Length: 155
Picture (cartoon, rainbow, N blue to C red):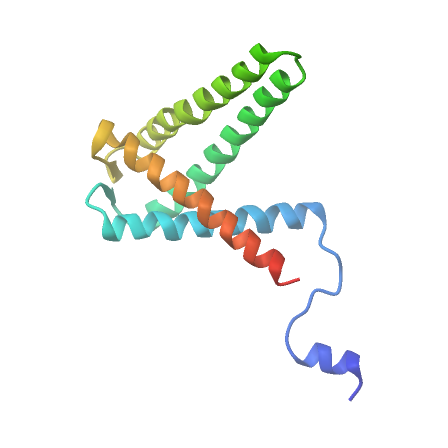
């Protein structure tokens, strides 16, 4: 059996380089699945997170992924603006604005979830759920980063 036949018989393989749309799809599909797992682990093991059903948690994970990526886009745009300015004041403003965007976005995200899902989703605890949503989002980002690093080491 030739090397090509062995390669194809061992399982599915990507023969073509994925397009940028395919890469985008896999990135966000994987992100949503990671977010879904993290979110449902909080539902299972935390008294501060309750979600009415698995279906609702899928939609919450999608919304969280969209809002989290939008927050990062806004934060990077603001950072780029201040990075192009000279001086210490611009550096201070860059960090201050980044912190305000990243911290303030959690209130926006919490309100978006509340508006979208109402009583089907509950985030409770300190600061009316802000602390738990911060914990969830930070853990989601950390797990996504760990998965990406693991994936890159496979090459």
